[in-house]
Image 1 (spheres, protein in one colour):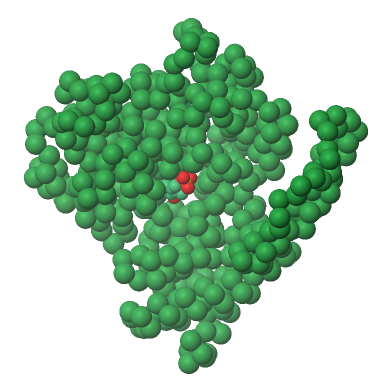
Image 2 (tube, rainbow, N blue to C red):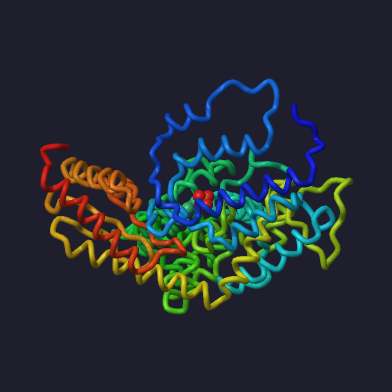
Length: 480
Ligand SMILES: *Cc1c(COP(=O)(O)O)cnc(C)c1O
């Protein structure tokens, strides 16, 4: 049995062992493509709850032995699945310290350094994304919770303007709030809305074009038809469509919505970072005129999981929606900022440390260069693949996302099967990682170039691997 009197040298040995394990893994995360699927991982981890405890060093060995064969190489340079940043070493180092320091970042008194790092990281974030300096920023788990927080502020404010205090009275009996959203908004935004009482069937969906963004003419039409003058209104737009990388036409849509006394929320989980890159900023132009924004740290900023930011122009509305007040919590004066006033949680991780560290490490220029490089790499990857007969690039590669279809003229289920088979062949090969998705009734392969360690050589190697996989599938389609 363990006691709580672990000697200092044992702590040191344990933490050094963990560091060595981590360093060895990071030396080449692609060296061992996962040999184990979920069921095999479950079998490896499973076992009865130990009656007697196990020494820390043994636990660490057991953990590594069970986990490593089932790790996806999402920190590697050729991982293009979903939209996943690299857990940059600078962020990992800051995050190790965050865990070791064990600060409960609820408020500025319980965790002065953590609260201060968050305050400064918030200011830098607004500068780098060129968003209003007066905005409130909540450090949350990801863009899903960022949208939840921002939309809670939106709900409170649009109802307050028609004389309804949702924080006091709740939603039953409240005037109806119209919510307009693109039909191809990210699934997580629909979740955030339903947590807030805006059920899926109650939303007014705006038709999208071939790149998945709202058609401005359809938006105008829906706004005129479905939203009575003066009615509480929330409009949800998107910067960075998950398959195409395209953004809604904010310059046109935001003024229309705001003229209706509405609130515009932008889901910019990764696409908002176009604003940090002078050559890409036009893609999200006009989004700065919105009322709130959701974005991620664990995508383009490369922070370790998990980290997202809820940004709300009206910081009072933000705090009204989130603040937990209790007599035992210290009051804030004008010059203090309590992290928990901007998020749903009270006890929480100090995400400000890794965010501050990475913003400082990259700087404004480094972030611009990272976004620029990923967009160029995505274009290169798309060009290489489009040159191969039977591979079609479905989107305009304006940002870092590439949507692919395999099978040339094969439509419908036949094209789906060829695309699925190619994805499986790429995953089996293991040189790079790509996953699939359903888009506009077809199965696609989606590539997201967003890892900081990806080089041009990795793009060529990956293009070769995908073409190889496709040729194998094409040469034996009867095997499907
Ligand atoms: C990733 C993503 C989300 C969800 O973000 P999480 O960090 O996973 O919560 C929302 N919207 C878009 C466009 C995304 O790419």
